[in-house]
Image 1 (cartoon, helix red, strand yellow):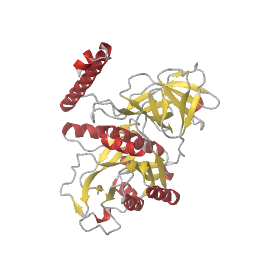
Image 2 (tube, one colour):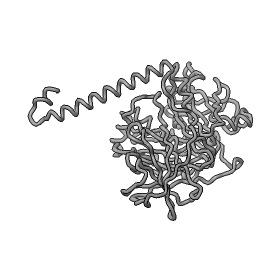
Image 3 (cartoon, helix red, strand yellow):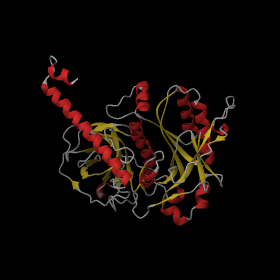
Image 4 (cartoon, one colour):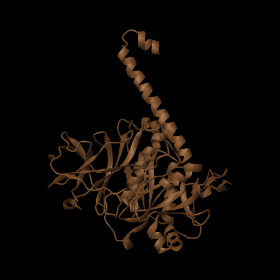
Amino acid sequence: MLQIWKYGSGISQKKLGRNENLYDEDVNDALDAMKYMKDLARGTAFIAPVVAKPEKLIEYSRCEDLKISQVASTGWIAAGDFYLFSAYYDQRMNSVFPGQHIVQLLGMHYRTFNETLYCTLRTPYTHTVVQAAVREIWQRAWDPRDHFYIPYLISCPVPRRLKEDPHLVVTVSTNRCIAEKTGVLKVHFNRRRTEDAKGKVAVCVKGLDYLEHKTYVNRFIEWMELQLLLGADSVTVYTYALTEKMFEVLDFYKKNRNLNHIGLTLPGESPNLPHIRSSFIWRNRQQKRRHELIPYNDCLYRHIDTHEYVLIIDTDEVVIPLKHSSWAEMIESELSEKLRDKATSISVTNVFKFPSSNNTASPFYMLENRRRSSTMQDKKDYGKSFVKTTNVATNHLLGSRSGNQAALQRKMSHRIEKGMSSTREKYGRGHLARSVGG
C-alpha cells in the first residue's frame, strides 16, 4: 500500500504524508486509551467529580441579536460543532451555579470537547450571552476511546432579568458572539408541582428499534400493563423505527393512559434511513451506548418538577417489590423520611428468567418465564435504579463490571447536582425488590 502511494501514477507524496499523519494519530489515540485502562486498573485514572465545583455567572451583553435559521422544541439542531437535542429550565438547588436558575441542554459533540463554550439566551425582548459549564456525561472508565459522538450536559446560568421567561430560546457556540445564522431550541418549562402533588415514579424507556419483530407488540402490551399495575404514574417511550401496529399501540396508550411518545433520530452525519440506521445502531454498540444517554437524561429532565423518581428500564425488565404491592408503598414503607430526602437513588439487584419450553400458545411472555437463573447478580454489581429527581444532574445506566471498574461505575452512575445530598442507597439481595429480566 505504501509503495502504491509513493510511486503510483497520480498519487502525490503530499497525500502519503497526510495518511502517515492519520496513522500516527490513530496509534497515539490507541496508546492513550491503553494507558488510561492501566491507570484505571491501578486506581489512579482521572474520574470526573460526582459533585460539580461552583462556577460564577459570567455575562456578556455587547453581542448583536441572533439570526435564527431554525427553532426546534425537541430533536437535533446543529450549533457549530455541537448537536443539541433538548433544553430544560431547571430551578432546583445546584452545585455548579449556586443560587442561579439554569437552562440545561443535552447535546453531542464528535470527540472530546475541551474549549470554552458560550450560551446565547434570547426572548422576544432581549438577549444575552453567558459562559456555560460543560460536563461530559460519558465517563472514560466505560470506554476511553473518543472517536465517537459523545453526550454532554451543558448548563447555562440564567440572569435574573430572564428568570422564568416562558419565551426563552437557547443555542451555544465557541464564539462569544454568533455572526452567522444558527438554530435554537425552545426551553421546556415543566409544570412545577409541590412535593405533595408530585407523582411518585415515572418510567423511561430508551430508543426502541423494532422494524420486523412480529411478537413485540404483545410483549410490549404485557410489559406496559405491568408497569401501570406496579405504580408507574407515567411512561415515556423513545422510538427510532417500529411497525405500524406498534405505533397504533403507542397511540392507544397515549390517548388512554399516561404515555409519552418521543421520536428519535441520530445526530450529525450518522445515517437516518430506517433500515440503514437500524443496522448502524446494532453494529456500533459503543456508539449506541453513548447515544442512549441522551434519552435517559432527557427523560430525567422532563420529570424533575413533576415526579419524585424516574426508573429507567428496558421492555424485557420489570422491577418486582418482594414485600409490597407497589413501588410507592415499598419506598414509603422501607425508607425513613430523612433517608428519602438524602438518597440520590435506590438500586435493586437483577435476576434473570428464561422462556419455558411450552409457552408458545400463551398470550403472555414474561409471566410465563418460570425458569430462573441459578446465579443471581451480586449486590455489589450495578442494578436498576429509582433515581431521585431533586438532586441528580445526569443519569447513566450500564451493565456491571468487575473489580475496580465495578466500584468506579457505582460511583459514577449518577452525577449529583445538590452537593449536600450524596447518599446512594443500594439494597442487598432480596431486601426490597428485584429487577426481573426475561
